Image (cartoon, rainbow, N blue to C red; front, side, top):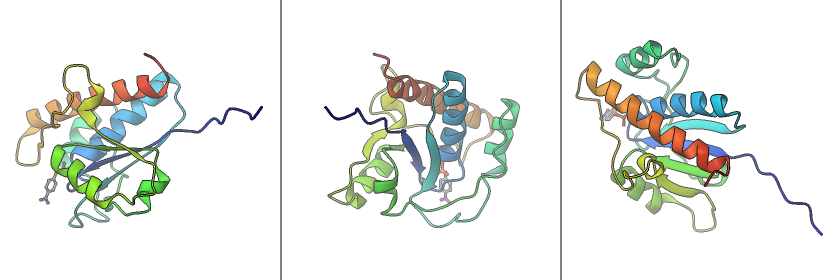
Length: 161
Ligand code: 4NP
């Protein structure tokens, strides 16, 4: 009999710019995974190239700081075809990003694609609100949404029903 393989989950969160929603989702997932004792790789990336090498938006840094999380060291990067082999799960902020990821996914790669809110009961198929043109309250709402998604995904990866 072959030994069951224990594969560490690896999760990539993706939005458009990688300065607002996906770094918030990465931070929320790190916090939830630590709380739940889940060992996982986590990263975030953007579909676009505008913010490569940049730290997250100041308002995103502020909202995480208010919740005791520091994301000042994160740096923007763009999704690459390699990501579909490196990560077991690629989780998009909205349907446009999900559609772009599906177009980009190499046929022989096995990464499972989903939306952040697919992992929240009653919110499957919905988009995480883009706070880029909003204010601090929009960033709070985005933080709440990505935290709910992260909590749901951590629960799924831990094998809970
Ligand atoms: P994000 O927000 O995709 O949540 O990081 C945006 C950031 C930058 C731009 C759009 C959305 N932009 O057009 O530069």
